[in-house]
Image 1 (cartoon, one colour):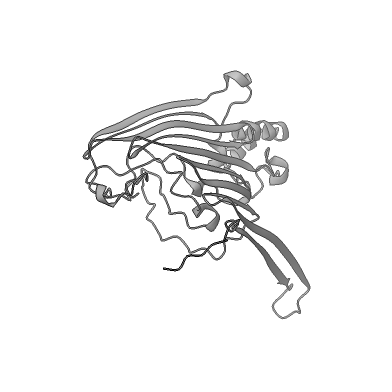
Image 2: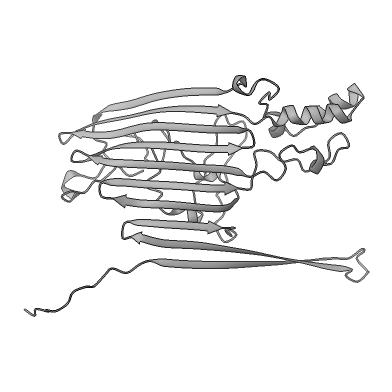
Length: 320
């Protein structure tokens, strides 16, 4: 056997990645097919992705103006006469890091692990559609798993792309240029031999509306074959007053009642649905509050890893 001596002071490697991106575009126009090109417009966009390993178990990711053009397209799904929302898997690189920390759902015994069942998954990253910037911290600190994500989303909840009642969208839109702020904090603390207690807080804000969700969930194992799982969550939602502001702007500019009614009927459905009734006192504006509680008690799911595959001091969870 060979023994090496005198080796000390060797530190671990630090992960640091910076990936800049530059996208250029040129557009040429001609008045008619037989005429030469009259003008050429060029446009360039710069973006960057950053990854920094704070420790061997804690990673910081940041992105600015990310380019997702090379991401694989979603498989088609039927959306005719659906009574439920469609969900698509996350494929964008920035959101894939630490995806095992944020979910709160788990499969029930005997059911498909990919089927969304109670407790519900409270965070769906695809709701952040077109991020201008984002930052994420994921990893572990001892027995605590931590996930923090914040993003500024350029995709609003509605879009006014045409004139309504003869009023151009840049004049009519009450929240033109406003971005959506979205964030989530998720923690999971290891308890007992193979369990955890977790908490989640999500927030989304656009203009004068917001959506908040807070939850507490846990999975505890008793003996070798029995688990107890539960989730309690509460929500608070207030819609932005898009429809009310559009109606007041149209009423101030259109004197003809028939023209006003026709203009209101031509509003995009997603804009007309956002009615926060801001004329009421701010503290009395309509809001939605919901609380859910669910749990299970029974044998360990068959899709969980067998006890013999666990190593001492580690924690394994059902595959989701």
